[in-house]
Length: 229
Image (cartoon, rainbow, N blue to C red; front, side, top):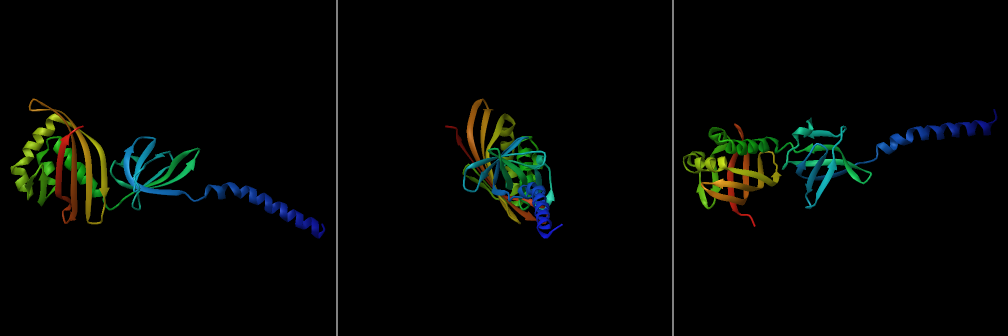
């Protein structure tokens, strides 16, 4: 075999090897990322309100990975109001989520906020109080209660009575996570009948939580409401 034939053979082998490896190179193309707050979750898609304001939808597939910090979690761990970073690819006009990474900082704080809301709505007096710091400060419709004991003696029973009769739907939730402090802001709609009067109102709730020796506790609550327009 002469030198020219040998060179041609090497070029053909190199070209064939390149064709074999081309799909793998294309598959490793960089993905895009977006950051925001989870606005809605369903089995097949996730809506995230980005830091710039718009809501972006992502398809969830069998290969989508879920993480909280560095730990693997499940799709069921995605909750409205949590902060998330979504790594995704654009395929056929859709944003397909490759990885959804939840914030590690506000995880336990969000769980405490959920337990507090659930306790109030299920008439669990002790469960609600367990979520509050002893020195919690509560602003409620212009009044102030400066401790957990004060709230227990005054407005708690009235709140439980009200929530036994009223249905609440969360409209929007935003979480500002931190290592030792987190802020959770929620808007909701209330409907039903209380003491013979119809209720149709919009409410806002701000919770401030701190990580203490006993774990995450609510140190400040601010509730307000007004009639639905």
